[in-house]
Length: 426
Ligand code: NAD
Image 1 (cartoon, rainbow, N blue to C red):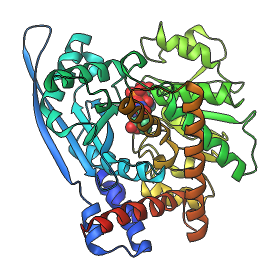
Image 2: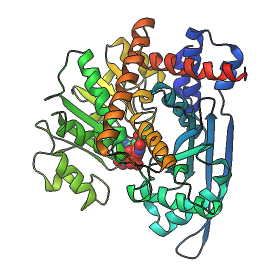
Image 3: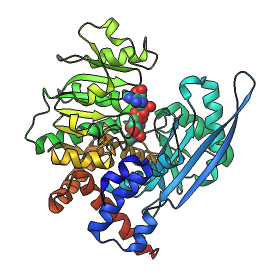
Image 4: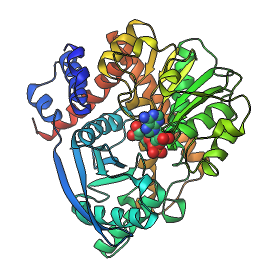
């Protein structure tokens, strides 16, 4: 497929084009291919929410289940003003492949609400979260579909959602949602699991390039759950030098390295959740735009914000030696081809950020038998899962001589197709 054509299209068209490429190489049965190109189920909901000023606003929401042939579906819920059904469809499909890459017995789903939580009070976000569960609740369950946090949702939102689901059911079903606080049946180590997986992949990818992580320079785009923990883990546990970070308010650069503790302190206190104003209080940090950050001459670039950041129009500007995708879908297919030609190693999202869903799966397992693991055990199992997945993906990549995203797709799609065939669906 000519990838340039999908460049202009939306995330779902991109996800379908990525599948088409893998299907061609795998000579996938046309019926299996047709089934995997579309979600199995989706629900569109309208959510009336009483606002603090007494008015009622109606929000649009979605839940999409892409494929459950390998197990119950799994995927986060995003609250974002730019949310669309096609973004949610793409994210649901990517979840199917992600669960398959790390070989956990789950399928893919995703949810979203079109809203801007940054402009809502906590009470309004709570009412919205509960309204969402009242509507999509019938689709959910430990054996059906299990949500988790994503962009602009967090453990508090998961707690309200769990509580609302428990009210609907009349009993606690802790495993219906993951990314919960530990006090409500969450798993130790879930908070930074996605980022820990990113760091494990960066380390394995560095070894492929004959590069040491100690002293390697890093730029991180996005300083939310994934970006901030990735910066902290890479700096503190792997000895990397984080030279640039950014978020929706802009970014900061220091060639000598930014202090990750100062960055997180700023975001948690004076910044009100943002990096805005960091350089006013910390000498040596100079402002940098998101576009400049993506083009920095660093060893490792970690996109950890939103999809569609590295595209045909800026992929030639990238000077990093490797890209480890914390975000979902940050690189478009046209950019993939350019980066591959230029010898820049991309660890694709469905592998690099799979640490989150892996520990979410561990959380479901712990909820099922009501017995909780120590942090060390969670981290050891996460490391083993990520390492096995990394090796399996690069075995495919090397065998078929393709870029690593396609290698990951070949692995993932083949496993899902096998489950679909065995069930007799196609
Ligand atoms: P988050 O809401 O905690 O953080 C998002 C960050 O991106 C914020 O710092 C925000 O300011 C920043 N951002 C938004 N728009 C931006 C822009 N245009 N330029 C620069 N920065 C921008 O969300 P998160 O959970 O960290 O998720 C980030 C990405 O990682 C998403 O693609 C998400 O789907 C993916 N992801 C998250 C998890 C998880 O466990 N949370 C797991 C796998 C993948």
